[in-house]
Length: 230
Image (cartoon, rainbow, N blue to C red):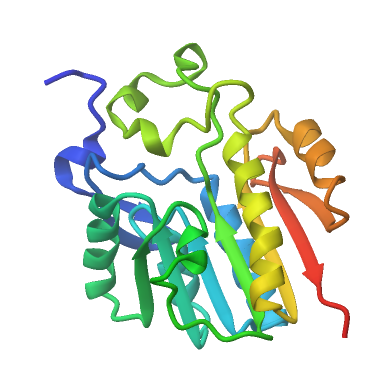
């Protein structure tokens, strides 16, 4: 076997946020940095308990399952573009039994389709995501083991790697217009060199936003707050 083949795929599990989760070649292997995203989400939930949690690009389901292991949220949606990833996330949830609705969706597109799930308007909503943010085929800046992970979970398009977030921000505008959440807070992981491009793009929307760091003090997360006029 290739020496770079991830041991997590060989043993079929990975430890993340004090728990074990099943992984396979259909999902990204969770990184330690993403635990900082979970911690920030838990901190937010304890101070401002949302009615609804949405995780976009759920992969193995580690982000919503980690959050729900600490706090209770009335309604949770976990979305992913591939059915293979959804199967892994559902399997992980079997071991925890959380109330999560898993849906195959290209970002938030399921909420604008004829198969729109039951989703109440006028709710406090928390959206978390770790979208692909690496520039297409930027292998020289990546570790050898990533060649075995799904490209769909790594690369965020060819120009900057931030294009998927630009697509998501456009969908968020439509989502807010349709569902009119009282508040919508977005916590998202990005590349450690993408603060400038994120700031440039976010300014166009007029949303309140800030950035926060991982445990190594590397600024790699966005916090966006959208409050409806009451």
